[in-house]
Image (cartoon, one colour):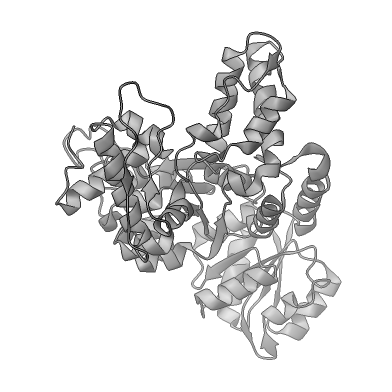
Amino acid sequence: MPHALVVDDDHDSAESLRALIAGERFTVAVAHNLRDAKRQIALQQPDILLLDLRLPDGNGMDLLADPKLVADSEVVLCTGHANLETSIQALRLGAADYLVKPVNLTQLQGVLSRIMKPAALQAEVKDLTANLAESGHFGHLWGRSAPMKRIYEQISRVAVTSVSVFITGESGTGKEVVAQTVHDLSRRRKLPFLAVNCGAISPNLIESEIFGHEKGSFTGAERQHQGFFERASGGTLFLDEITEMPLELQVKLLRVLETGRFMRVGSTTSQETDVRIIAATNRSPYQAVAQGKLREDLLYRLNIFPIELPPLRERASDIPLLANHFLAAISEQEGQQRRFTPEAIAALIDYPWPGNVRELRNAVQRAYVMAAGDTIDDSWLPSTSEAGPLSGWSGLAAAAAEAPVRAAAPAPVAGADAMPTITLPVGSSVAEAERALMLATLRHFNHHKERTAAALGISLKTLYNRLKEYAAEGGTDADKP
């Protein structure tokens, strides 16, 4: 049987925890101070250590300061003195989770069910890192460049904890792939990983999709529906494009993160949830707060562990590896092997990839289809003359610093005049630059949204979301067909 050690100076609380843990088929020892805790650890190394922070002879985190003492134990803080600062400090020292007294039975059961030896997790990460030079990938992520190695180091540190992760980066950089890798290296890996694109669900339905609804709670609710929080129970919920979530729903999400409870639409009874949240956005999060798209309190609650993904143009050394990886997968799927010529690889490296890894994958697939033989040359690969502006907030920040700003089309348009220019004063905000560039490009293409999105190097969905915002702000013809 697995063994647990409860370290708590409150005798009643310690006895209550002992009884709960014993009911989950654990042997349990109890210590009421640091001295007794060290003695119990010497007698039998616990599989899980539930540790109070405030003890008569010191702070509970003093045990974490000695890695040899708890090297093979999963440490969970269990205290009535909870705050964000102490939880982050403890997690940095190696604690796997953080529970608040009075301990919620459902959350405790979840913690106990996910016990994994820290040494086993560390060995797994060590193997991935050791094989990186040969394999070229870390989990689901591909790349050997310095920026990606930094990302792998961050993932390795945060995956084994339970803290919320906030991933930022331009569209197409692989935010969902990072979230999946964090999940797969965590103690929650055997339970669901669910991804929700907050910008792809109707504002009228998103609350029902995330929290669920009761039968008859609204017109068309013919049966009870489980939301993502219920379906991801014990696992990980990835909230992509979090800034597209309506503000009134952000309030409810914040409440769930703070209390661990939620209610289905139409219900008066709250339910417990044990889900790890990973959120992502392709916007600058602080700009989103300034624009009223993201609540500041929610940002600080989600942004405990930020990961910022580099655009592909900042890790160009990874392009050949990524391109050959995509080509190998397509060749296996189609049943015919093809390879790139040196000229093709050079063209891929030279292109700035405003759509990042997603655009690279699509370009490889198109080139594979168009290739006449077993080799792929640069005939059907994008060239720098076809590249649109840099995408994301970094590209727009660069655009705002230069005047005039040119909106380049991906290819010459038959019968079209030369592309116009727009001029912005130095000091214009990124939001102003983005708005001016999008609307000018839209007007140039006579409100043809597909061609506008292609010229800007963004997805059609992103364009629709931005135009909807501009139309709501008024004073534009952004919603014109």
